[in-house]
Structures are given as C-alpha cells and as structure tokens.
Length: 598
Image (cartoon, rainbow, N blue to C red; front, side, top):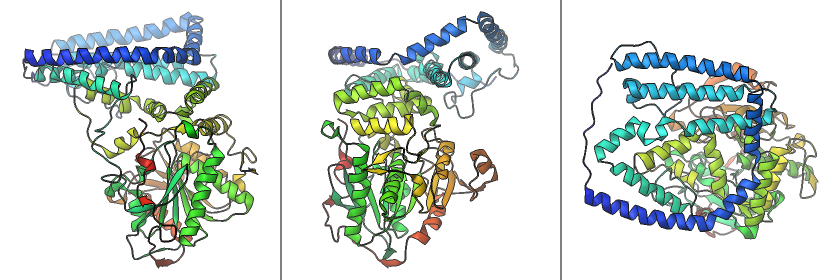
C-alpha cells in the first residue's frame, strides 16, 4: 500500500475564530428570520401544487412490497457484496494487498479523483460501500414492474438525485480532501465555507444560489461580449446588433443569428479566442444577432407568435432596410432554432423567401423523445409552473437554470458545493460559467405555449399543428437548404432527438454531429483542435445507422459549416459599416443583455 503522508496540523487562532463565529451567528439569525417571513407560505403552496413526485415514489413502494421475494433477493445480493467488501477492507487495514476492487467509479465520475480514495484503506472502503449501495438502489428502482414508462423515468431520475446527494464526497467527515484541508488550515476552510454559504443565501433571497464562478470577474462589453458592433434596431422584445467588419470585403448576403430567449446571446461571443461571432465576422460575413429583452411582468402577455412578429420577422425587415439585401442566411441555437424553424414555416406559408439557408444548433423540432427533460414536463409540473407564472407574470430564469443543473448534478451542483462550502475556496473565474449564471426570465404566456405545444403536444413537427399570425404551419413546405449541427453528449437536446428534425423539411438537409455537449460541442473554435465531428451525407432513418456509417473528422465543425454556407452567401462586396442606414442606437452588446434578474 502506498505511503500516505499526514497533513501538517495548524492550530486556529481562537480570537479570529471567535470573531468569525460571532459574525456568522448574527448573519445567520437575520437570514433565517427574513427567510421564514418571506418564504414559508410560498413553500407550503409549492408542496400542495406539486404532489406528483411523492405519488410516484408511493406507487413504487407499494409495488415493491407486493413482491417481497424479489425485494429480499435483491437485499441478499447486496448483503453478499458487503460481506466481500468487509473481508477485503479488513485485509487492507492489516496491510495485506487485496484483490481488485469490487466496484470502481465510472471513468467520467470526477468525485473520487483524490489519491486517498484509492490508497487509503478506510476511504477506499467508504467509496466502494457507497458505489455498491447507490448501484443497488438505482437497479432496484429500475427493476420495479407495472409502472408506466413516464413515471418510471421520473423515479429513476429523482433516485439518482438522491444517491448523488448522499455521496461521501459531499460531507466533511467522509471527504479526505476536506479533512486534510481542515487540518492544514485549522478549520478556516469551514468558517470561510459557511460565510460563502450565507452570501449565496443572501444573494438568492433565501434560496441557495450557488456561485459557479467569480461573478465580479466579467462585464459584458468589456471582457466578454466585446466584439465591436452597434445596436441598429430595437423594439420592446429585442435589440438587433450589427457587428463591425474585420475584412475589406464581405459576402453579399448577411447572416442573422437567433439565440434562445432562455439564455443570453453572448454564449456565441464570450472572449475573442472562443467567440463564434468574431470568427464569423473574420470569415467575411455581415453578422446580425438578436439580443432578447430580459422580460418582467409587463411583458407577461407576450406570446410565441409575438417572438416571430417582433423577433425574427422584425429582424429580417430591419436587415433589409439597413443593407438593401432581400435574402439572408440564418442560424438558430437551441430554442432559437425552434423559433427559426417556425419562422421559416410561416414565411413559406405567405410566400416570403427572405431566408436563403438555415442552420440549426442543437435544435429539437420533433419533441417525441426529449431525453431527461421529460421528467419536468408532465401535466402536474407544467400546471405548477403556470400557477407561478400567473402569479409573477414570468418564469424566473434561476428556476430553469436549476432544472438544467439537475441534469448534471455532480458537475453543476455538488462540485461547487464541495469547493465553495467544504473547502472554503472562491470560485474560479470562468467566462462560460459566468454566462450560465446570467439567467433571463421567460414571459408567462410565451413559456406556457412553448411547453405545451412543443414539449407536451409535439405540434411543431406536425403539418397544421400550430398556427402563427393567422398561418397554419408546415415544415415540409420549407425548401431552402438546411444544416443541422448537434452534439453527441448533449443532455439538453439529445442528438438522436435533433436528428429526427432532418425528416421534416422539403429541401436539401445536411446533418453533422459534433463532439462534447450542448455548449462545448457548439462553441468549439478551430484553433482549439478539440472534439472533432462526424459527417454522413446519407440521411438514413436510424440515427445509430447514420453514425455507424459516418466519417469522423478531427477539429472543429465550424470550417465544415463555412464550406456548406458559402455557395448561399453571394459574391463579395465592400464591407458594410454598422448603422449606415438605420443609425446606431448604442454600442454592442447593447443594454438589453446587461439587465440582471435582480
């Protein structure tokens, strides 16, 4: 067994500890008092509104007890594994080299990377005990029979949340890194961690708002979202940004980017080295981007078709007035891609051909297989959200951010819990996580329409399924060239679900699959040389068959897209000055993007 060095023990300064504890106690008392006054009634209402999870687990328990033999068999299996683990652990405690571990963490599991989880017999026992138990719990839940598929997915999802929360890494007494740090700092890490916890509770007004990054390290327009440009048009729903050229000549047809309204557009314009917008400008495109307003209760009645009328269609009108060009190439990211597809169907219905080609980043159009998000979109939970939105006029972005974080809880919740509260460290400055923390609200009427008609009823993919601005929509009537880029590890828009969208259009369609996930798979600059992508021009029915026959390429898909869009971009003309016709209202990134939830 490898030698483990004991940490140097530091004795705390009793005066400093006394001061810190006194400040924490005073702050905690004030926080708890404020929280109880403000939240108790709302939390009670939430419990009444959302009984679905409890009902699902009650049904599971009843079915488990109805087959006691099967449950006993599973328990005996777990007990047998524990006996083997105890024997192996006892031998390790005596310095005997044992057999291979009974269970190992998955390669993707970053929780047990500290060397003590491998080399210290006690912590190795704790780790294996947890992994055996968590696997047993999850397999037992998955094996319950007689439960409908939707309820089963919900049970499996929340069971995983439960076992992830109980990981030994999340507790000071069973995390070797925290124990070592506590001894080395004389407990200062725990005092600092408690201070960080109170600060996050204060910022969240009683709800825990975990800082994923240093929220003071970035400022839009200064060190992120800093690509030069102007706001050339705005209405109550969006600002339209036009970026300054970096080349002497540009393609004739402008490029319009439609970002999701659930997040801010500058995921595509973080810093210069990873800015998709900057890269597009450098390739010779006149780039326009929609920056959605961060809505408050005054915009509660804004509907989905308002986002078409005042968003994408208004942007097309403004671009034509600014540049004199009738046609544009358009790209939509995630929900922005769903809006772009809806706009294309609307334009096809009225005979408007202003969009020359369309690109969809991680966009679902057929929502029949939405992945893990399905557990959040049953009737009970949508009704609960609608009640909250009816009360407030909008859905607070922090609630959606929390939902997405739960899809990767170990990476997006518990890793920061350990770093900030147990180790007492400050979050590392990271542009992507700053953007992720900069949430937006969703208007009540718009978000309800989106959840019910896309996720719940899956109508956008059905001819005549939805009507926008008086027009019945059919994606099959869209005949312009279409390019799909999805990500193989995407947990928000699973690539096999986005692949189904390729069958809906009436024109030529190209599908490309990038590496990594929902963000990194898209924001993947060529200079980084990461991830790679798969390409297969044969759009077969089965996505697995498509991938099996696809050719894998190294590097970024950006260059592949450039080769695809160039034939639709027109000839080169002298570069355009932003606001030459419409005038410049303000510098990019504009004021809409700077509005915070608070």
